[in-house]
Length: 115
Image (cartoon, rainbow, N blue to C red; front, side):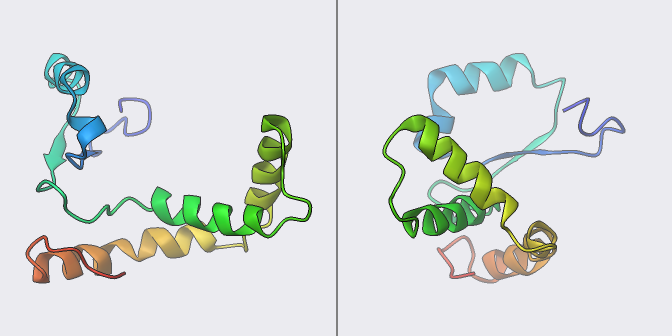
């Protein structure tokens, strides 16, 4: 966090999903609590992390390949090629969608939303 947000403005998003709320993860967060700021989502809230959109887009592109990747090396190559094929500005659009996503989540009081 200190490297990415050297001015101390970053926050760690803790979404309380089962793997992220494991004893190991909770212990790590407690041990490093002075190193970072984080905010909690209510349990089972919608995942507001744009990486989910990116994984979904990569999955769709890779699934359309013919022939499909059959080894881990071919899959890695397919993912790298697919990443390079994203249109310019794709990631910026996802980042700019965050205020709308947060507003929708707040209006829904944490209930799952479509975004």
